[in-house]
Length: 506
Image (cartoon, rainbow, N blue to C red):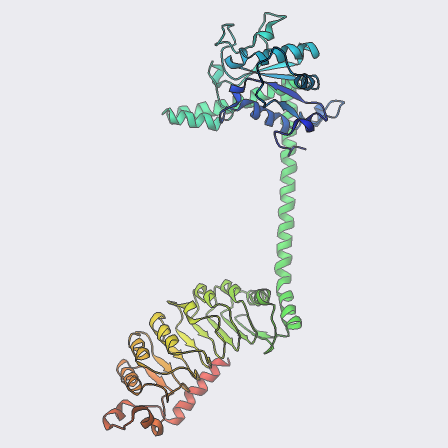
């Protein structure tokens, strides 16, 4: 009822009586913050009458209040439609100003309402002008108010400090005007505070008259109703807050178990882990519920507090963006995951030191999704058939914090001069694993340059071609190059490979 718009169609309003009819000059409702008729209509329609003052007719508000927004043609009498509205209105509220005082329509509406109803149901609201004079252009009262009396009517006065100049529909608008006039801060605060109080008091005076209640009694009833409404709203807000907290606690308490059930029973995943380490293995050919499934992973990872290590094996088309919520994650292993859509979430893991993408299909995800990452120190890319020379070049040039780069079994990777140049630009790299790459297609000069650069930079190269195949790479076996081809013995290489395998299967 109280959410009705301020202006509704006449056809809807005629279905019931009007709480009031506002008579005004169109010039008193045409500017912002001085649209008095609309402002007063909105206030009256939304005011809730205190329950102890509700009359026998059961009216709980003044809704609807009639305001005529049509531009009336000059005529000597009111239209039948306006007369009908006046006859259905319980009160006439006249906005008094020098403009309304000379308005023929305002005077006719006053005269018509007095004939249809009674003069004691006419209420005046002063918004501008001087009520102490009858001088046209200065007085605020329309002459029709004095047809049967010489005494000026009682009126609510919305002028600032009761002076003969127009105020505003809000104290904030007055404050802005005073600031624009360059008034002092103390003066602005005092005038604004006094005007806000005046607007409140004068509106209550008007309401008391409309309800035919003595002003002091009405103020007490009004304040009591306001306190009751405030108390009810406070209780309702506390109850809502309590229910929200209860729901949140229940959600947090049940989320891990629900997530574990979804992963284990719906997706057939194997789950293992403790407070800091979580391992989840999906069936190799499972069609996964993409985004929601990873949300379940995050739910499990956060149930015990801080998760630093996360291993996800298997699954296809996993949308891994929710993993970015695991702010404490230091090690992420994605093994055998197919068709990853994106790796950009990795850039939001500010503590991530080690990333493993072994046997993972990176298409359509690309290594360039993690370009210029300055946190990852160890990167495992073993078994990725899509890794090519340009990927290695880009990784070496952009990931400046890398200390270890493992590229075993990357069958399409060859060593060329661009790879060597990128290798030369590294500063922190300490270990490079090239086991099982396409050595026969690699450029011999590039391989030799890589070995020389590694010796100079003291970088540990793993997986170089054996002594027996050296001629296939270089075409000759120069004695001068042999000291530069210091490779690990077979047992050392086996030990390193075994160590790498243990890391990948951790």
